[in-house]
Image (cartoon, rainbow, N blue to C red):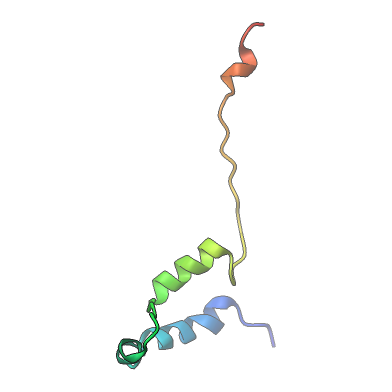
Length: 72
């Protein structure tokens, strides 16, 4: 049996958590500040902080260094 990929394993869990309607009333009752995030925001944070993600492709953008070509 192959190991499930992220989409197969985590996506249903993220959808389930995003549908939780108990979170809003609970967060309103708690004395500490709680920031609720939805699925797309969670995905953005995971990408920004490199948590649970893998870099597939990386691009390097270069420009010409004009100082290199100046006469001395």
